[in-house]
Image (cartoon, rainbow, N blue to C red; front, side, top):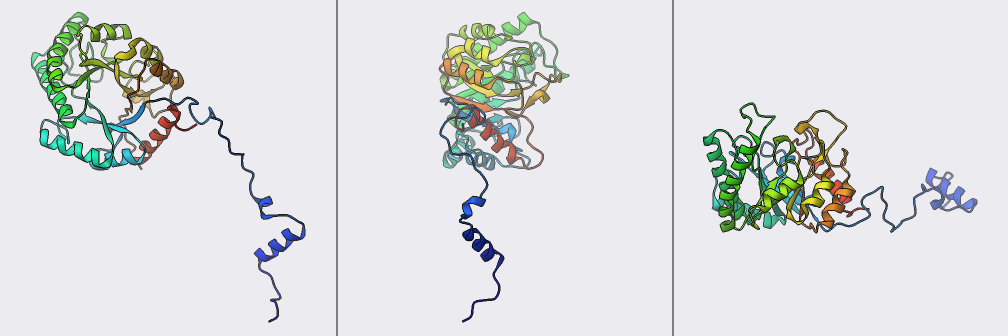
Length: 335
């Protein structure tokens, strides 16, 4: 059979390459040689022995995703745990009880993700230090329900806001005198500690610059230590004091009192001192290497939980995956 009187473009190219002694590899784009040396441009060159978690507020729950979908997405994105939120009308609320929470625990176990803690916004409408006795009483009652929910879920960490001198985002909160706030907070936590001890859960006191109470790590230490209880610890939030202070300083002073941690990115470049100031991880001014070093030096090996209040309006899964990647870089899992 006679050969065809024409060549395909591919055959012609091969023939040309062969005629000049080249290989196809000569036309491949140049690639950097593989390296095993950690690269500070990619992530931390130190590996930190801490766990990755994310708060449920970063998900479009319950409007667009079910609790199961959120847990599964967190697992798929590479998180070790997820922090759940207690509210008046969701899967964790006064409308539910032990049997419901046992099912949620079972669901998390089936998916293979830990529940890193329990959080709630209810400490703001029902402050433990309110000038309104009815609100104080309701706050105590709800805090007890949150602790019971944590126990039923098999969760040890319960975030607690002990009180507030001021709540700038609420128009229904009357300012509370500093000394009165302190006295009421101590009374409330003292009462709740007895309940927490029976349930074997920890009331982790959160630092919040906006509420005008426990404004320095030394004040926080004095408050927590005054209860002489392993059931009253610290929930350290890196962003809540970043307006005028620095989380790496707090982490060292708090030391081993820290039982749980919120990672919130903050930018000192802005002037909007509200919840809108918080940003996705790495898009701010937080010195993450210094923060993780300080936590490691204090012996912290627990959960680092990303807390963010604005699920993406479009393609909300993107925020979850982006956060997981950022945390891998912060913790030295990708360098």
